[in-house]
Length: 214
Image (cartoon, rainbow, N blue to C red; front, side):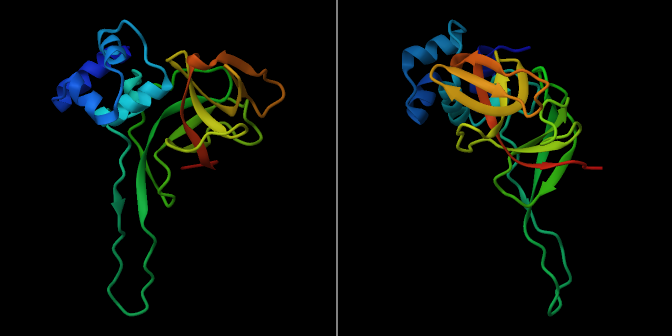
């Protein structure tokens, strides 16, 4: 799997950008940026967010996941309807990708990229994931789809998609206590998972779910 430094350098080459361009775009510290580019230090969540914004790539891709390089598509499509008086005009819909499968149990890497897109009515949705495991039952059943907003406000008690140690993804309730984050299941048969803040990256908040997409 590519490192974050590999992905930063790939994106800089693809976007024809230099370090000074990134600094100018988002105001990131030049010394820190140099360390990230050279692989000396691994950026934390706030730096990853700034880097992804400057390079116009998704945070998940930047962290080495097997997902498309660009941010999830924002394309809005209008379904065709007859141009006749009184005809029903459907609401705008947005198409988002299902990027892979994610654990609702022991954290796993969400690396099974699925070439499948689904239309949604909520334009705040950025991508979707299929849930494996039952640690979030009865709230989220196995094989459900969760719809995720990347830039949502994250407060204690919300359901999030979290990346643990840079390569393990899971869906859980989010709680932060000082310098530690607790990822809490819905199912009481599973234990809470506690990590230092620097080991957890929040990829987004679950804002909708669907129990079947077939």
